[in-house]
Image (cartoon, rainbow, N blue to C red; front, side, top):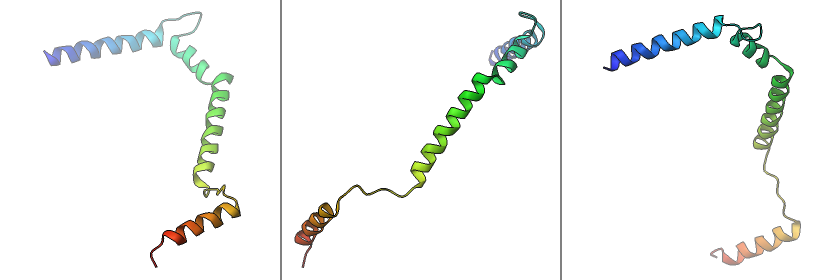
Length: 87
């Protein structure tokens, strides 16, 4: 039963691929419409935005952590640590 089901799905998907490659809709095949959409300006804008976000995130993760404590805060923390440290 599994072999028959796989064979039917394979034939159906090959037929779908043939239809997408040969049937014309508005003068172009669906694959040509898809190709035009992928290479269009909207796609390039989306790709540029994703690359920018990736580079920003990569820069943030690669940089050293930034300390946001003032010198007074650091001194107070060092005093607390010195009090609790065993002699």
